[in-house]
Length: 267
Image 1: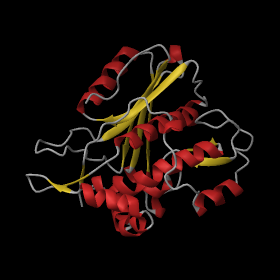
Image 2: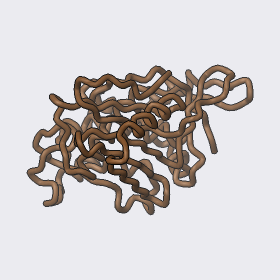
Image 3: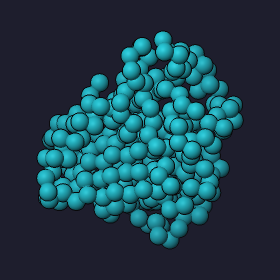
């Protein structure tokens, strides 16, 4: 099944604190995790903000995947505040993103759609009200791009910690994340070339290819880096007009020195 998600204006400068948890309360899974923090992450700094960690977090939420593919996903220490914010973003994205994928791992997410929407009637009403059929007959659903922008920036922070052991210092570095349509992919490719031969390249694949990411780290300016992430084989981003859908199927982001100005996503 393939749905084409409607395009919305994404906020390139979204920060974790700008998005509130739409659920309000933590779900039972999160409470269980907080009560059983592994020794590996106890008394560590939160990978996302540097505050004392009180739980552990999968950088890519397990709920994106069927249970048999969840083993081995990157895991980092996390504070309760970031846990609340990130889980709020994930609640929305886990519900909507599988509709934009043909990957086998997305099928379970599509099957759970009715149950998830039954617990979030506001989102159900939003999707129902925004449903459109394009001139070519393909269905289009509304999509809150700012949620994926904020989630992308958090994932980049988590991957920098997981791969490099670094908590990004907000006073010195800036993180931007967004959907990588054609323009965004070209911008990251230019940055990748600017890093030159001295850059360290990291490539990882999990969940039988349902989760992939690549990182390019500029050795002279660690943690300056750029990241490309593909989830569920790539999400198909569309426009609500009759033109072709966006050619990009990745999301990702960059870590820059605070004074540098680079736009990741190009409308």
